[in-house]
Image (cartoon, rainbow, N blue to C red; front, side, top):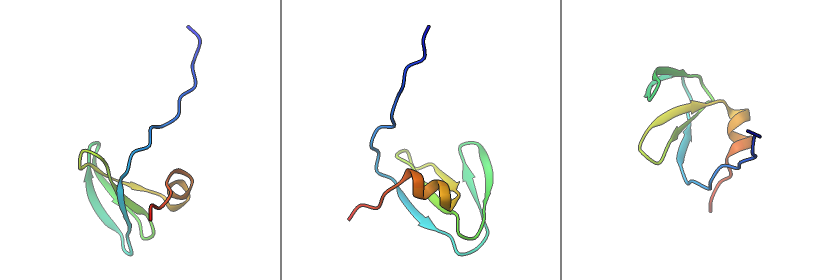
Length: 63
């Protein structure tokens, strides 16, 4: 079987950038978000931290 290429579907999420170290409950368990990390809430209400450089490459703001 040959691999195929895929692109992520356009999904709107909410996010905020934390100004302190926090712990959040994720689908994978408790995770630490460092100061400056983005906390993203997905389409099912799940939360997860994302490092700023990855966030900037993955997400664009909506006006």
